[in-house]
Image: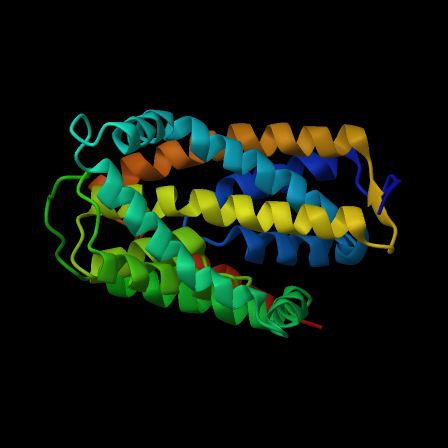
Amino acid sequence: MLTPGTALGYGMAAFLGAVQGVAEFLPISSSGHLSLFEAWLGVDAATAGHSFNIVVHAGTLLAVLLVFRRDLLELLRGLVDPAAVPWARPLAAAIVVGSLPLVVVLAPGIEDLVVAMEGNTRAVGAALILTAAMLGFSHRRQTPQDDRNQPPSLGRALLIGIAQLIAVAPGISRSGSTIAAALALGLGRARAARFSFLLSIPAITAATGKEALEVLTSDVPVAFAPGPFALGFVVSFLVGFASLRLLLAMIERVGLWPFVPYLVLVGTAAILLAP
């Protein structure tokens, strides 16, 4: 149940929207950063924080749809006419198989565990350091220069989907874990990044829709400030669009290694500053 509220000012809404836009696509965990900043800034995650997170996730969803609009249009065309786009149906099958592990999130107790982690900055810090370890491992692998349009096999797609499932824990980067898994399985950098972000579309859509439905149907009042929330949406979209374009350019040249020291630093700070 939404109620009018002013729990978030415009400045904080813009700041948190920018955090979401940067961290959703760069492999540094948007959920982890939002949890940390909301804790450090005193945002009540049970009221404004939860509903605001839905809004900024919607902004970054729009960003990934825009960046990959040509791929998505080609995918739709290939589903109708397989001869025109031969890779479309195999890619669609890989996305479906890669999304299957997320069904585990519906199991009893999983959501409560995730919510508990969101309020535990020490756990989030440890998860950020684990993300750094995954990125560091993937950087050490020599990856081939392969066709970015070639979808992974269904077996590889399932393993990448399991990596995406692990990222429901705040502090584990979704893009980082899936790209690292794809690289470990032998995909080239461009191919790994493309599949990771196409795989993110159903995941972000389902998660955002589920959370929105829970907020709207809940009997617990949830603060909603239209102005700051709208600003957060716009900022998360614009910053997310720029961040995604930046990562796609970076991953071909330098890989994911530059994010490792940052994640170790923030993760260590979160652990040391935990109450």
